[in-house]
Length: 250
Image (cartoon, rainbow, N blue to C red; front, side, top):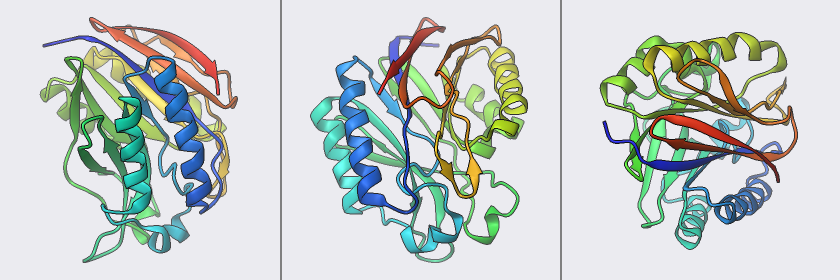
């Protein structure tokens, strides 16, 4: 398994309900900051461009050619960084998806769709059925969106596909953090890859989120973490499978 030296920035940022233009502007600021700090990848939480607003999903769902996503792609090219942002994706034939856009410095754009929905999400959206990985600096990265990581098969597929790092973009509340952290820690230990979490800090979708974005090493220990709900970039350096780093104020 190839393992390079890769720095992944986890973005903890304030998000406004349904305010795509304002949220995009905040994303662009964080992308620029992450690039300046030397990150190879910057990852935003679940539905970061819109907030976790299920009732607005259909209204805000974006086609893959959306101008907002083109703007993110241009930022990835300009700053030579991979950008992963959360967005509702238009589905012509049915309900929208909870998705992520992955913008590369080459101008290439990929998409991942959440495979495992939380209870109640199926009223508003449709699950995906394909796992997603990409490679940066010989580091193979698997993506998850929130409830994906609660299903053991998701990480098992990532391992089978030789992932070196597993990243979850999520929405986690204060009450949900401890059980979710235990799941993520156990996953890192079981599969022997660092597991990273990008979480919200805003009140979104009726949830007061708790931040605490960070990463667990292969011993299942929390090795890198944000200071609670402070707006920040959590820099996670992965070298030969070893996780280190720290939080930077945004």
